[in-house]
Length: 193
Image (tube, rainbow, N blue to C red; front, side, top):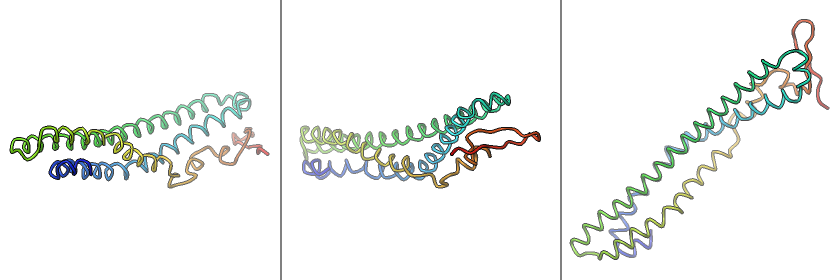
């Protein structure tokens, strides 16, 4: 921006029109992304828990004929994780389009202001072209800066740490390595040591 301001202060101000749009994009995205990323991680944990617990107790699951139950649980957990993944990607795409809108508006304002300034002989066509190209060169660094804000919510631990364990089956919550059914259709577990 300093380089554009050094060409002509009016062109620099025209380019700064994009700054509030970037800020608004971040203010829109960050409150929505953190809870969604946390929910996605919880869903992925539930999917992993369902899959691993079924695989570790595969002989017992087969022995008691629980394959369908476990497959349904894995399918439900996988569907939930997939749906959250799609929703996260959809939100990120909308964030990207808001960033692109800021770039488009900033470049358009520079070109429009430059057109008017060239008509009145305040600046040359070369200055306007240089300002537009300099602004265009800022697209990548600004985008990387904007998308670095995406890393913060995606790496933050879930607000309800351990919530995946609350939704897992009782035998999985207890840390069971294997389950067995007693006569009253209750499950008991042998703990992993």
